[in-house]
Length: 98
Image (tube, rainbow, N blue to C red; front, side, top):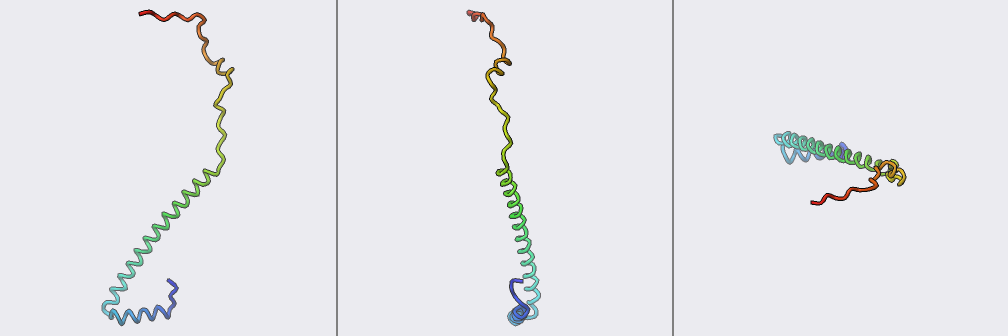
C-alpha cells in the first residue's frame, strides 16, 4: 500500500492521534476512507475508458492492415457494351417545326 510498511504506518497513526486527538480521529479516518473510495472509483472509470479506447484502436489497426478485397472489374470491353445497347434508327425523323 503506497510502499508504506507496518512500522511507518504505526508512526503515522500515533502522530495523527496526537495531532487530532481521540475524538476527531474517527471522523478524519472516515472522511479519508470515503475520499480513497471515490479516488478508486474515478481511477477505475478512467482505466475502463482507456481499455475501451485501446480495443477500438487495435480493431481499427487490424482493419487497416487487412488486405482489401479485390474489386470487381468495372470497366467492360466495348464489344460487351455495344451488344447490350439499342441500335439507333437508320433514318432519324426530322425534328417537328413549331
